[in-house]
Length: 333
Ligand SMILES: [Zn+2]
Image (cartoon, rainbow, N blue to C red; front, side):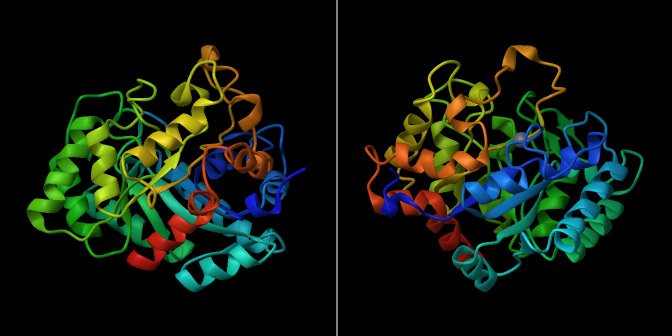
């Protein structure tokens, strides 16, 4: 029996639903076999706000793919309006938590896909403005995926911030859009922070779907000093459900990552960033199963909260489930 007091509406900071819909033939947001955050699963898990990334995992920028994900974001609102509402301000965010719908909010995973390599930086800015106009609001932008983009080095590189990256940060100054450090190399993350400080830029910092390197050693996970920078700057860190970044064979590491975030002082920063994507055709078979049985889909969110009850008191559970994101939006939006 689930205890009512652990039954909190969920806000999740990262999924690749739009990339799945734009790339997989015959894809559908209803298909729970393809992706863990299908419409039904979001309802089951009481997910009331899902951030959907316009994502580019491809090595070369593909602006058509970026465009089709924007079209899919609109389709959610137009064709699935019974289930989904756009959330573009703090009032809508608070209201959606009390409703039985799911709010959606957009973000960009890998700004490198805002323009082709032979296009000028201005075309990236033009496309960014189109995206903001179409989606209503962007929660965060990361400058890279795993590899290198024209803006800097991703988590599989040792590269830092490039000239175009500096121009990009100047451009998004004061726009209430966070920079996401989930896919940066350590060098890029440090360069971004140094540049923000040097220029006095107003850009919030978050890691939308990241765990902690001290708990499980992986380059995609945050080293202590970067996690603390995010925490000290009133940002957010969304815990990632992927086995590859949590632990190879112990699902209890989900709790360990969260507890470690708390130990670093992150009681106002921890939140969820499960990172559901379509794993069916992923080339790296060693990663199967991509998620532990207990975290396989968003329909399990309330059980996941319940399973954390022994370790976390109710106030922290609520902060993790939704309150920290609401607090962040209150502060920055
Ligand atoms: Zn990612």
